[in-house]
Image (cartoon, rainbow, N blue to C red; front, top):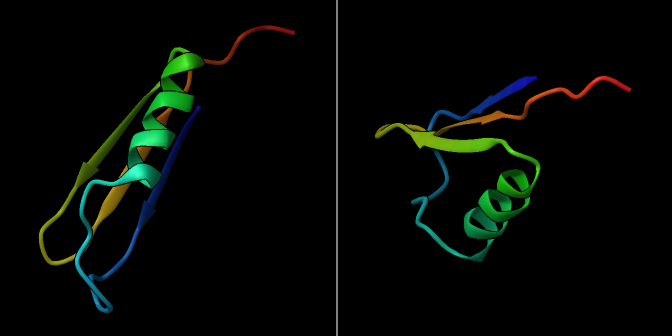
Length: 53
């Protein structure tokens, strides 16, 4: 499963902190990954492998 969230960059500067670090730790525990890209805006891409029920 993949989720992409993006903004236009209006409203502030994004920097690493507990929020992104914690998100990476939680997603990593599920076998997934988080990627942050962008300069004028920010895009977060979260990918988590789906496991059959």
